[in-house]
Length: 99
Image 1 (cartoon, rainbow, N blue to C red):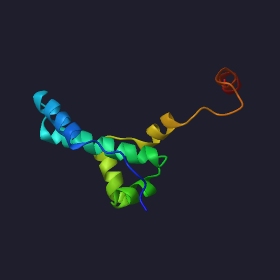
Image 2 (image 1 turned 90 degrees about the horizontal axis):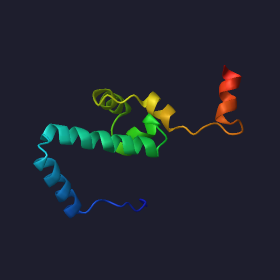
Image 3 (image 1 turned 60 degrees about the horizontal axis):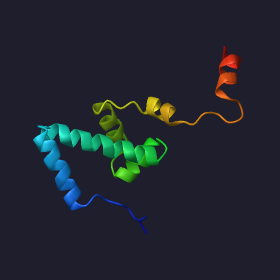
Image 4 (image 1 turned 30 degrees about the horizontal axis):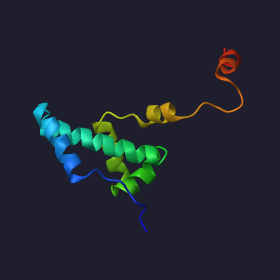
């Protein structure tokens, strides 16, 4: 059984499309932005695991890797940015130990 999802309503999507159209956003850019956000959301939800994300997106892992490259997304840097600080040693002491 699939978990319950909260999707934007048709009215919310219509409003977003109208806002983008009035701002002069070209179709190709709107599709690229949507694709980028969709992939990033799935990747974040699956802790940046490309194999699991590809399965969730129902695409081949190589297709996901190519899509990430086309969108200019570097998963390794995103993964590092999403990590929490280490436990036990405060940030200031970490710098002193490392330095």
